[in-house]
Image (cartoon, rainbow, N blue to C red; front, side):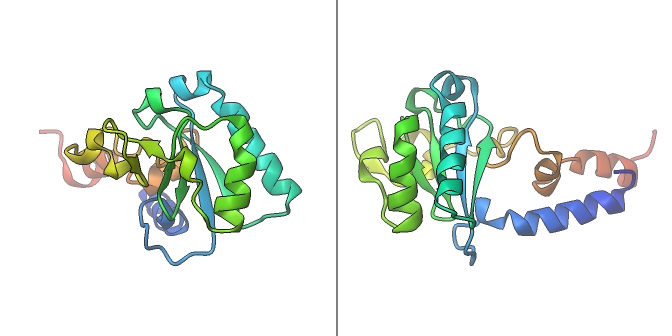
Length: 176
């Protein structure tokens, strides 16, 4: 990457590709399985969960699903966390052994695995992260992309407005 034009191109192309991460009404055949890779989830076997999902998808020859390592969702006590997009289904306390059931039920048959849905503080099951009382009144600013992008993929960072501040500095600001 050497120019702002290259950043713009990456942002446009990658954002279109990843629209289903933030657009639950995305018209796509592809699904993304987002697996938290924050410290809490990692210590509760999320790396194993990532590998199990990938292995099962390969064994079953399912090609329209991507398994994505994400940053922390901010709910370590509920981890490991898995979110399926574009449906935005929020599974909590997932174990490596649950991967097969999620693939067979949710991905192949289109049925939510009810027992893995997250429970809110009052015990009610929530289908999506935004339904949790913990998040309802929050507006994430600095951490808005946590749980959405792969923190190790610079193109995903750019797609979700990475380097926007640098662009503003270079184009709009002066030294004075």
